Length: 71
Image 1 (tube, rainbow, N blue to C red):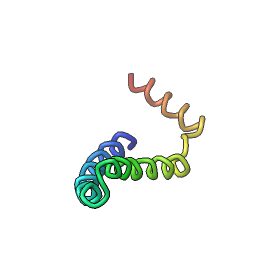
Image 2 (cartoon, one colour; image 1 turned 120 degrees about the vertical axis):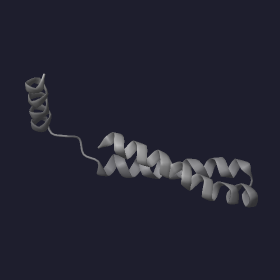
Image 3 (cartoon, rainbow, N blue to C red; image 1 turned 90 degrees about the vertical axis):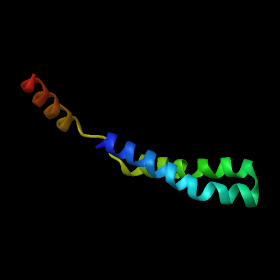
Image 4 (cartoon, rainbow, N blue to C red; image 1 turned 90 degrees about the horizontal axis):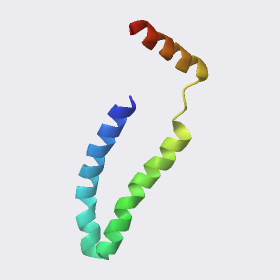
């Protein structure tokens, strides 16, 4: 799931930046455009930090057992 989220966010980020960065650069300057493109990933980082939970030790042990059985 984490790889899927990472890949989706990469594509979403490129698309989003291409939509608003030219506007910001034209109206506020290129320095502001660079800062503006850093704000969205930082907001997502904070949201992920507070909403994504670490798996419990029980779930990790179960996954390890399943992996060792498959090997």
